[in-house]
Amino acid sequence: MRKHLARLRTHRTGGRFAALLAGALLVATAQPTTAAPRPAPTAPASSSVAHRPARPAWTGTWATAPTQTPASDTTAFEDQTLRQVVRVSIGGGRVRIRLSNEFGDRPLVIGEARVARPAAGGPDSRIDPRTDRPLTFGGHASVTIPAGAPLLSDPVDLRVPAGSDLVVSIHLPERTAGSTLHAFAQRQNYVASGNVTRHPGIEATSTNDRWYFLTGVSVAPLQADGVGRAEGVDRSSAVVTLGDSITDGANTEPGADHRWPDFLAQRLRTAYGPYARGVLNEGVSGNRLLHDPSPPAGSDAENFAAYFGQSALRRFDRDVAAQPGARHLIVLLGVNDLGHPGTVAPESERVSAADLIDAHRQLIARAHERGLKAYGGTILPFKGDTLGFYSPANEAARTTFNHWLRTSGEYDGVIDFDKALRDPSDPQHLLARYDSGDHLHPNDAGAEAMAKAVPLKFLR
Image (tube, rainbow, N blue to C red; front, side):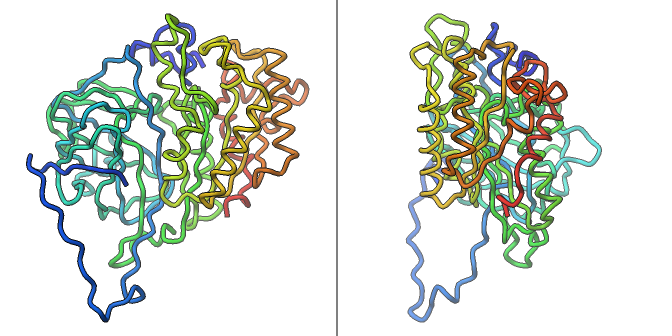
């Protein structure tokens, strides 16, 4: 995992365990004044719901889990444009973008925002001007997002092919702390001076591998002529993958979109074509089931632990239940609950297999309450890991948890990642050809093997 997060040290996250980093109220601000609310339209007495045109079925095609920044990260923007690139899992004829100020402590002013497809054969920072579309928010080109809130854009007519890239440009006119982000994007993103959201090409003053304020993209068919139905969006649903750095893509090839959920999205598109499910990656490097980050006082971990995100139990409603079109959930969590205490978390937060099982039972219950099918992934082996996670006690807890997962029948299905990637001759270790080198995170081949371990019948 050290190579995975060496880059983050440039964001003031030093030290040995820096490697561990593996709708809502909105205020439209086209003008400083706030418009009076319009009265709700009254339907004629002869109208009926049956005669109204059907609303498009919005489905998540890309998502990422937001986290906050530690106090040591002083990144800020002022009169700058962020141009950020994402890869969608399914396509459509209309898109909408979700922005977030959920970890901000003051309003976030968006001067202008636009969405486009990248130019063919060009760098990610260059857009195809024929596809460039303005984003509006309640009809306004600029908007202020209250502290602690997310924001959905108005729908935009834009044909987006499945498995393609999408570029979102955001102008931040006022000084803005980078308070809400996903710290490990595995994509190069760009910062440029001034409002250059409309420019096909930009001169970046800096680059980073983070997504700032951007947390989701959803798609739907065009209502007028059905454009997007060829992509199956009108009949589609989404799969949410809830996990830690293994799901987040730690130690896979940067820029290649080789996280295991990316490979799963490819499998689904191959198997089901226009009726593939969207895949929404809600992995957060360093994430735990039961605890928020709590680095020991005075430790180096104070410089980066905030990037590990809120516990999965705490973030479930935002990162899973609120995702548009979500019908399936895959959970792979628990290794950091075992490995963090005594390394980047206090010993008092050490957990047992029974604690992990109880937490997973909560996820199952909450998923079922929302009508989601829930599938559990066995914890991968990590003997010999370079981060000090392994101990005989942690291995015993992992083995006990995996046995419960395989035999209890409490999840709607089991995905045996452990069996798919372990060394048959030494099952406490990852198989060498799947090991990224830290004996904890799979490499690209391992991520692909994980995707192949998912029974597609679960996701029909």
